[in-house]
Figure (cartoon, rainbow, N blue to C red):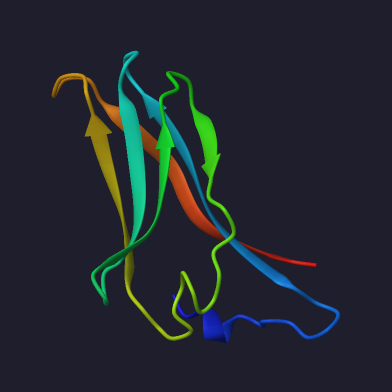
Length: 103
């Protein structure tokens, strides 16, 4: 992903980037954590969490360029982690995306 390839906007157009995912846990007391990770630089960008037993949409705060997302090409991965519960108690991510909105 390279934010510099996305039109950053002029005076009349602004760009907003957020990380979104649909997360769910199997049992009460669990937490699902989905991390957007900059693999190129070895740093975490943002984490989303959910404790819901039904699918819910989790949305990050606005990601800034060049603050959160460097203004150059980087390789990003997502990492899903379960906190609490047992190995048989799954957590799921049904969809994850960087959403870019112009206004």
